Image (cartoon, rainbow, N blue to C red; front, side, top):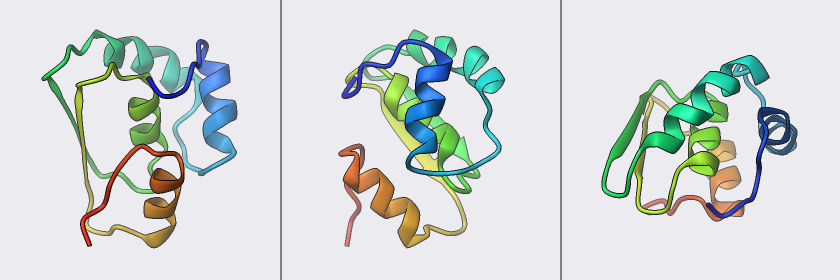
Length: 93
C-alpha cells in the first residue's frame, strides 16, 4: 500500500480530496476488507469505473502485487490525472 489509511472514514476523507462519486463510507466498510483478502498475483476487475472512486479505493486498499483493472467506455483525462498524481497507475500513450 502506498498510503496508510486504516478506517473507511480515512479512505473516504482522502479520496474525496481527489474525486467524487456515489461510493460511500458504508460501501467502503464492506468493500475494503474484501479487497484486502486478495493475494499477490490475484486480479480485481471493475467494469464501469465512472469517476474512479471505488477503483481508487481498491488501489489504496490492495496489497502490493494484486492486479487491479478498471474498464469503462470512457477514460476521462480528469481520472487519468488523479491516478497519475497519486502514483497509482501508468497509462499507455
